[in-house]
Length: 458
Image (cartoon, rainbow, N blue to C red; front, side, top):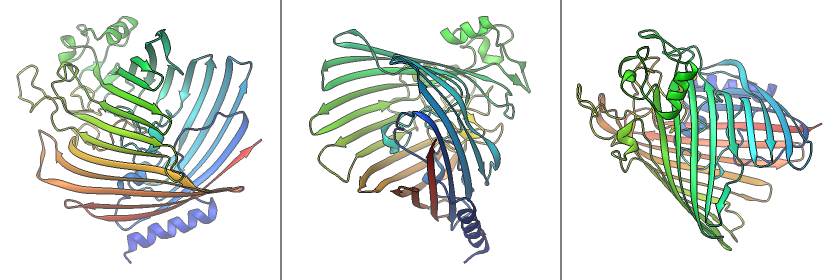
């Protein structure tokens, strides 16, 4: 046994002795009522220098490639004033080791719900979609791979019926990025709109657009970026920047805009629920015009009835290789999409140095281009239960090409696999995890984890 592995195992055992170990939750949370305290911990050990991919990806940024111990304390209080008004406040404190070690706020938020409108302020993780088995947690741009961004987020809890056959829903958000990035203290504007055709109670076709813009902040090259109210209006409507904007933003839309389209068809039947979906990625007009087709996530999510041990299964194909074509220097419109990277906002679509969206994209250093943003991936996830046992599994086969500017000498073929088994008792939830990664380019690794979580209703 090598010394590195022995050190990781010793850390694991020490952590389990002191704090018990922690489970990183998944799935949809039940509505809280009253005061609740949760204490959890997690311990990991791996044969390589890094943990297996799915043991730390899409885990709210709580774990990273080198984390071996984690402790998390959470508290939340909720009260319902009447049928239409509800208030929830909560927070969490996270301590871990690894690349981004230390003690930090995991959440600190207030949520107010009025009828079918919910408003969040502070640090709050977004809910997982598709039972936590999708490769992107149901959202290619915001996959819960990074820590919660501070800001405000308003969403509709149910769609508005414009007509019997037409529904509409929307979200709005504004966030603040950290100081320690290439453009310090930048901001993020967000909005989305979904329209759905309801053919019958069991058939629904929806199309949506999610839009994000990084703007403002202080660039080490261009100085203070525009962030006055008039600039925010330009950001909202995608208008070009003024004389104070950097480089191409004087001609192009102000800031770093990105987002996605989603087209989905949902079948609801007595024996199953099935969702077929496609989410693309866009970074500029070429992506908005679908010149990067068929890049994005293509998926089929199934919840069968009558299979007691299977709650859901999800199959996805992910592609990011087109990017509207190879970039050609000096030719407008041929800069390439370079997903989650921007020349002005060089830290890209990251928070606390973690990609916010699709986790297969590997960001570069502080001000460098991505290491890898061109991949083909086939992904399968499943979750279910048997008695007090719950399980979740993921397996992804990826072919990684690097980037257009810096391609790999030869394609990387990699397999990322993960399994999680949870056992619920009256005195807490015990969790065991196992991950195995294989690659013909980097180190293979086997990882194990043990966790414990206990909730106190006060």
